[in-house]
Image 1 (cartoon, helix red, strand yellow):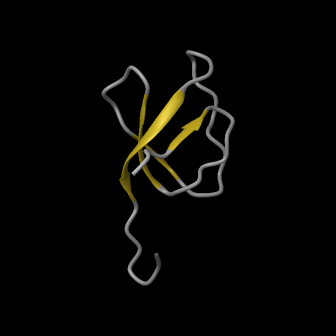
Image 2 (cartoon, rainbow, N blue to C red):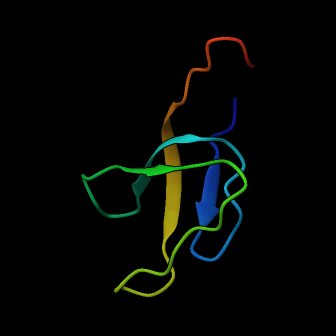
Length: 57
């Protein structure tokens, strides 16, 4: 299974917790929204925990 990743400025494919490259923190992104700019320029984020929906996917 391939990992879900998104770059700064991209559209979030799946809601959940994402970890920025080179960091130990996690941020929450919502599906369909754009990834905001960061102070370090373009950054790649990897999904670490997908949001669970009660009646959804």
